[in-house]
Length: 607
Image (tube, rainbow, N blue to C red; front, side):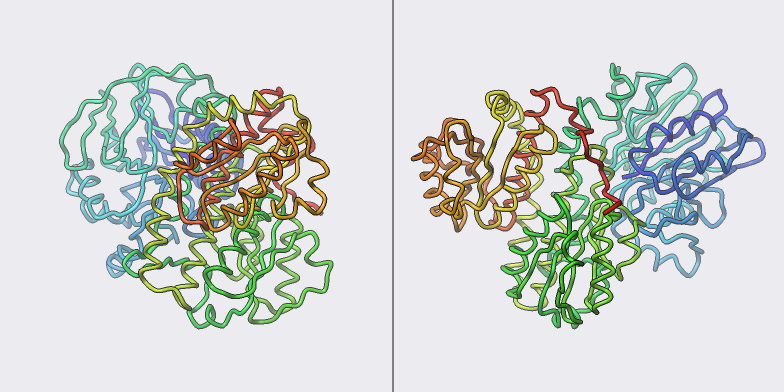
């Protein structure tokens, strides 16, 4: 996820663009750049790091010009370097653009253009400049529209040309763009945040639309160049609400982001006709994958729970032994590793101190070490010999939500790829892919129950202890639900495997100790029913997560949340969402600081 801002009007563009970048920095902050068209042509400045680095590089002078574009990057293709920072340009340096999204067929396009065009970056975005350049016929909008006919993937795109000092071209497919209108001025941005200081009158581009911004007005077309009319909307948000896109807290926004960012985790990584996935960043040959005879997952906190889910996934699909280690304990025991052991280190930030120490210990002992991280260019991403980015975008709330689900998605893709090389047939792989593709719509069904879950939270807000129960792949889900409740509501809770209740936990059961039980329809359904019966027999108060259509579940509790059915190994992608919402609504009901809970930080960079 990256931030885009563009301006055309009567004021100097540079200060407006830099101010806009500051307001967009939560969308990406590994590099930034600006391009302004003035009397002497186009001036471009780019810098690695936060917006302040770009401002320092520009210095005290203003790049003259009343039209320009700027970008703050969250890297997906290519490392964090000035060459990879936006804006990008074609060979002739006349066409300049900024892009948010992923061009899935950029490798094929780059190969096609490699003989006649010179590339200076590792990004997928640069190919767009060369593609538009190859179609340029004097009409910039037409050239952009023609070029985009050859693109597969997602884009929020803003283009300018040296010979068109009064025109910005914007296009959208899967990556949002909003256009703001003021008196004689026009803005375009990834979201309304940077616009509200200047105007609250906006129009949102939809997928497959292209807009031509001039100093006289805006014209909007389809990619087939049919002109269309768009209504103007008035936004009543303040700046903070705009960053949160109308949500009261970043955490709630990020919970609701999950159907979208989950698609980003899958995009470009599935080969449906072969019933497999391809995670090229892992840098493992088919032979190396087949030679792996043991997998170890190492992580902390929420990422540790995804590693536990990974153990269930890989043992089921690959039939090889798997282990899960808390990173803070991993290097302090005599772990046995060799060249046939694959160690997955999992970290949202890629900077977690204990996980980084585990990377170095595993490498020292000769294991294959691969990272699963969210932050491009992070230390773990650099120190492992390969890995996968989860593409969840920046998480601003301390409690992780969307990164968790995208980590699970990446583990599922890796297990699918590995299993297809060892034992899984094409038909089974395609069935799994079909189920993976259904997840976003099912996530939305879960999120539609937010108000119902809010009612349950308010009903239970006076309780000071909670127990979360699950079995099989839902045991780690119970642990994650318990952790979320602890983190942001400050309520004591425990996550437990339901089959272990007889070994001590039953002693705690009474009406003052509510139990949140996950009883979805899977291979352990009957076992879980029996465990819940034990809770009922001891007077325990139950909140139940069950599968749609399971009317028998109403016999256990009046407080029920229903989840859509899916493949058993995919259940955590759905079953975690209501637990996140329950913790969120509980914290709000108790007046907690949801996004910044006490004593916690987003990234733990010290031991």
